[in-house]
Amino acid sequence: MNKTLRTIAIVVAVVLLIAMPVVGGYNKMISLEQKVKVSEGNIDTQLQRRSDLIPNLVATVKGYASQEKDIFTQIAEARAKLGGAKTVTDKAQADSELGSAVSRLLVVVENYPDLKSSANFKDLTVALEGTENRVGIARQDYNTNVNNYNSTIKKFPNSIIAGIFRFDEKAYYKASESAKEVPKVDFTK
Image 1 (spheres, rainbow, N blue to C red):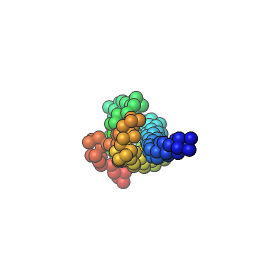
Image 2: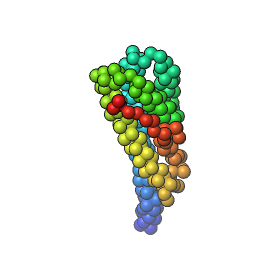
Image 3: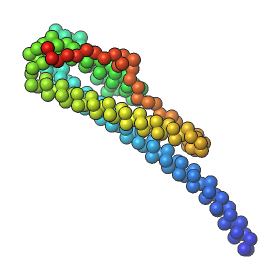
């Protein structure tokens, strides 16, 4: 009986030695995956904030620049595309298109000095600038969390655990090529 008890204790110890790193690795991957999801949600929150500000900005500019209809259409289409985006890649593409359209709108504003001096327009552009900063920070946080997650699931022995429990690599938030072109905006005129 004593020998049986010792055999059971050895088996239990071996099982625990194997199970503990697996459980620890699994829990770490779950935590990192949740951080990625929270970061993605934060991007969505900031994109929604920007999307909510843009109609006010557009309405303010429309009063002064009613002949600039195509830019308003582009903004509306880009907002709709962003609202319907499901994947991080789709969101990044739609975000880029919306950013480009808003940049074109701000360039159009240059032709309307009265608009540039409007208190409402100034307030909206300050709010939009603040939101753009928040979007940038949210993107950075997301990519940092994706990097931590992806690095963890690729390292041994976590790669084995990740394969067993189907932890897949997450996509980084990347700007499209068109977003790399900086539009010239000058509010000093």
